[in-house]
Length: 316
Length: 316
Image (tube, rainbow over all chains, first blue to last red; front, side, top):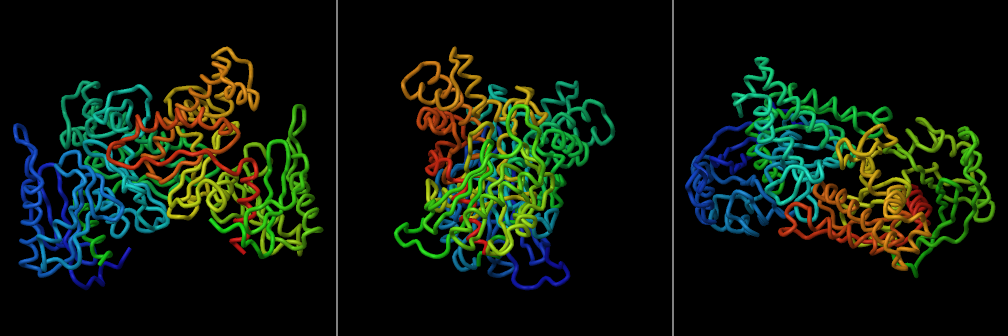
């Protein structure tokens, strides 16, 4: 981690395209967000047609230009919830956005012109979050890190030997569709028994319902923290499934550290303690190895913009 | 891959400690085995007590010295079926051998003395096999490679960004105990539903029995290649389970290539074709990505000694 007291140099802009809003932030070299701009994510909401490629681009250009008008030329990084190729140029596929093999970097670079330093950098949102946690958050000293983000589904990213591992297609870290129960619950991906069917925001809501609670989201987290038995039981169940899948990833990669982020991780130990217990109980050779620490992410919802800005800065 | 016509430089010795014999081989820079020496693995067989640490060391020293007497000083690498620390010094745990946190490199280096160049190098046998396949075999051009070895159980290794990924404890690539069926078949590791309970030499024998065959090992392979329905069905079943687990590893790592080695892989397409079909059918985003090729290993039972010799040569 860098010393946050010695930050200097030009700012960089990170942009995170979320389910409801597009957040752009000017981030300094110490990882501090010094300005933000937001706009609604186009084409999201009941009864609204999926946005066109140009509508989404318009939104991205708008928030970036609002910031560069104030802060001058910046490097720009975009965190996208989708499959981004390993060179950070194309969005191959984004489940909730119109991009299909879209040369997003080239298009945004062309439209933003001289307000951007170098080319616009594009990466998967989980890679951005992990880059941010590695620089400024929970993963500062670790060489091999698995990041698992629990939102609506599961996202993930890998830092191996100190560098992001993206894989051949830029699709490494897609843990959510690892099969944990062959022939299990049907998944939107067309498969069955995918991990995110058992461990995610949606799985949490389902588990809470099975335990008699009608709560979900932050209200469910608050209820669990207040000791509500159904909410606590739901986090414990999802936490155990977190441990099951984590054990598989740890068996394959033997990391130093597992960082759990995303909205579901806000419950902290209610989720992480059962995950650790399951991991220690099922991981092969557990008596002959150092288990990785399993910790919560530190940067919260800003991890995507901080990481995108940092990665863009590193590239140029 | 190096050009095998230009080999030169000093030879290196690789030693592979197998279930029945210890094989040592002098390997030239082109990966060619130019001499071998074998001895029985101490303490293996029905009614025989597990060998002592010194008995196993004696056997290793004996085969190496028999070769150095003829070939002069060599670098020496040892492939061990066990957990080896990431620095190649200690065997933390070996299921079938007496080593428990054993400083094998230091002990062998001390005993072999001036007949060895540098320190004796020790690595996991699957890492050695992958190093051999990367230099001289099936994985020559690939950057990110998953190696899966199907013997009695499952071993594995990872080449990521062109380098072996060993992990914090040197235990990366231990795919055999990834859970593929929660609450499934009991495993020697104490867990349930481990991948190697469904995909390994033992799983193959079990499947053949369920299909009415009493064959196992090479006889079962020959029967399958001759079209025996029970044998073919057993390989198809184990092949599908190979695909299930491979899909999980590929989802996490997005490699260029999957190399399948070990005795079970001798059946070739009878095993690999169902695995590829399962992989293509279950891997997330299969329509939006290039799938890794799934190929058989090329170096066969010599991969361990060739890789151990090559890794020892690289270190010194």
